Length: 163
Image: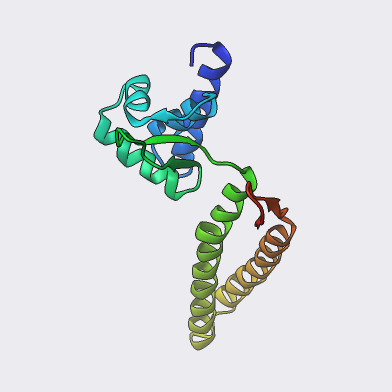
């Protein structure tokens, strides 16, 4: 990753990782994969990012869990190789289903509990607040459902489809 464009992208992805609760090294490792035309070994990733192999391994596991990267089957030398995720749509769908939908559900439960408590206390200010949150969350859930419905079905190499 030697060009100015890839260095700029690396720093932007590092910042994005921080903003979403990750580490800058996650963004930098993802950038290395993004700008590589071939899978990279864990050793290469750690070396290029200036990380200990153990730290790179933990971070790569998180990137794989988030569907931002894929771990390829180990070869005869048992080294781990990684590449970027096949589909941006898969990344978005996974994030919506695994992160955003559960967060909206938790917020909805909190708003319901808050509204119930506000009603018991006969507090019109809190009733209005929690009712507004319930309305917002109902709309947000509808938007997320529409987005999930619109995610294209993609062909899978070797046949079949992936959603």
